Structures are given as structure tokens and as C-alpha cells.
Image (spheres, one colour):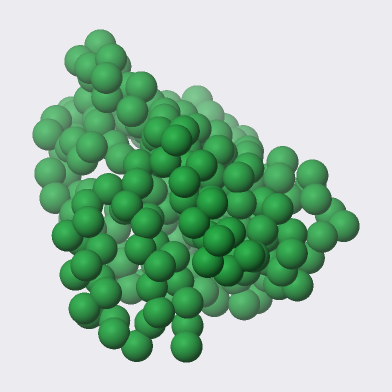
Amino acid sequence: MTEIAVVGRNEEDLEKLGSEFSAVNFLFIPGDISKTDDVENISQKIKDAWGSLDILVNNAGVVSAGPLTEISDEDIINQININLTGLILLTKKVLPLLKKSKEGAIINISSGLGYIAMPFYSVYAATKAAVRQFSDAIRREYPDYPLHVMTVYPTATDTDMMKNAKAGNMDSAEKVAKQTIEGLLNKKINVILGGDERKQQIEINFNEPEKMDKITKDNYENMKKRTENHRSM
């Protein structure tokens, strides 16, 4: 039977997940990865239950969009703590368990904004770009272990996180999951959603940043309107 540990802040959501997938042997761990005591507890419970770990999926994330001066200090700190600091600390704590696996893997969920920063997502984009750098560093830090480190860059995805965003043509969560699994099986380092168009945008952003500046300037008002109520903390 498949064994999966799931961490979440809402115990009711964890119970609902268990009822929906009764064939899976879940280890539910209530916790908040922005809290160091919770991160320690998560790693200890996994160690006590299994003694090792095959795959770590770091997909906890929150967002608070808007002009930087209008984002609360609390939302700025929490975005950094959950999207980045908690991810790093949890990875650190479970690395000894991952190193025991013959097929260990770390999957870090970044964002398309981790490659192309957009106005009104300054803090969120900063955290997701840092996830990209962290993934590369960890992969290069443990070259002698069978530890595959992969980063996923979704576009806007139809989840609860996007309820307050005025975004169209979102990817489904199922599509992101499928491409993530395919990427892992094919030992990809980066899984970038959005097709060739997104890859071209990334190339422009890195090679001709002034051109991307102009693109965002031309669409500034639309971007501001779409993000004015986008908050999921």
C-alpha cells in the first residue's frame, strides 16, 4: 500500500483527504511549516513512522499581492516564512531520511513568477525565485547521493489559492501533478508549465530584461486590476 505523509494547518482538510483516498495509507501531521517547532515535529514523526523517506514534495505556499507599500508587514513576513524559510528548514530536517533512500527525490514547487517577476507580486516572486536557487544549490551539494532535486514552475493553477485572483485560462491541479510526475520519472531538473510561450518569455526576461519591462508597463493597469484582491494566506 502506498504510504504518504501529508502536512497541513487544517485538520478537517486532512480528514477529508483521507476519506477521498481510502486506498492510501496516510500519515497526517497537523502543522505549520512557518513554525520551527512544527517543522521539528514533522521530521520526527516521519522518522518514527518510517525511518527513511523517498520523496519530499515542498508545495506549501501563500500569496499576498498588491503594491509593496500596501502589503502588510505580517503578510510579507508570512510569505517569506512559509514559501521559503519553512521549505528550507523542512528540507534540512528530513535530508538524513532522504539520504537513506536508493531513489530519494526532492520536488520543490516554485512558480512561473520565480522566473519572471511581475508587478504586484514582489514578495511572492522573490520567495519563488529563491526556491529555484535553493534547488540548484542542494542538487550540487549532494552529488554523491542518489538524490534527485527537481523544481516545478506552474502557471496560474485552479486551486483555492487563486479564488480571489482575476485570472483566466488556468491550468488544472491535475495537469500540474501529471507533468510533475512525468518530470520526476524522466529525471528532469526543471518542469516549466506554460509551453513554448512561457519558455520564450523566460528567454526574453533573462536576455532582454528591458523588453520585459516594456511588456509589463503596457499591461500595467490590467495587471493591477487582476491582482487587487489576490490574497490567500
